[in-house]
Length: 180
Image (cartoon, rainbow, N blue to C red; front, side):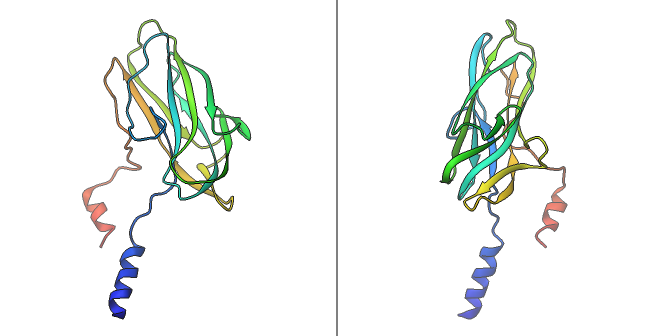
């Protein structure tokens, strides 16, 4: 019986846990990662959502924007930023200890080009200026690194990529070697 209990503990201890992730999605619940591109002279909104958190009181990040024809109009966020704004970098308080998904901000852009400029457009969650990584704050207000996601669309209307981004190139043999 002791062997079974020890084996169960060992097996459970090696299961991967999702790390905190702050991504950009076309809708506030973060259930889809691709959406339609904006039409010329129309507003488009995306949502910055904190995913995979078991409890967080805030976060610090910025949104890098490929502004080829996009004009940032503003944001509606969970709270006023403690410092800064979403595009140039901000720290947000969630007003208490919340679990994911947490919709942190709705960002609104105007697509100002009369003719679509062909290409792939990216909005990327990046570290707050001066930080090495995107930061989240647990329920004890301790800072932890998190991953930052992105949202992309291509004009004309062809999606240029999806939400999955490899962290680094690898081979199948290198992946198998991790579990030997």
